[in-house]
Image (cartoon, rainbow, N blue to C red):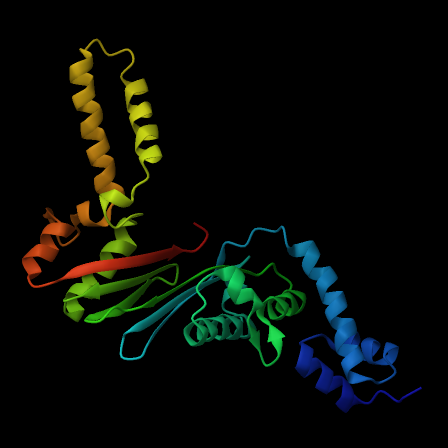
Length: 276
């Protein structure tokens, strides 16, 4: 049997992040074969990861990247179970690796990112390895990637490490773009314009409002106006251009953009919030 040296154990630990005893036992079972020992540890890691896969992961990090003179932006949310692990160096390195891959490859869905490879290893396997070593469920929840249209640029904002925003805007200066990113972080719009809101969603809201007025003696014509008013109020909450501007509540975002002049427009945005 091959002698298992301290140097061999150290090399395996550095490559896999496994403990001393786990590494030594794997090398013994593999008779000193490094690649087989790595495979043994990965197999055991897969078993550990499976037990953790259903555990809630609502902590983690949101990372934004702005590249190519602000014409390319990417945002990644990588989740774990605790804030302690979110600060773990290996976890942070994994999140940054994923963000770099999104920027470099053009892939913009989490499922596609999981299949990408870094140094010959798929991201999903790197996550599995991290689960085995760190001891918590880790999930790549979502990614977003924007490339600006001619005349536009991308800006980003992260609030308290828990809310991330990516915005593509044209015709505006950096100050207004930053203010709009703050708006999105604070007010959590779900849509850019009213036309994007699914009609089924509005019908469901109308149904709720009508039910709330079921015992009201007012005529149906009056109730209809009340329902329409509540629907408008709902749209002001979920549609960015209809929201009151946080720096001047007397104006809507649409008014602010018009007053900025020229061809100022928000083309799209993404907002991630940890655990939400």
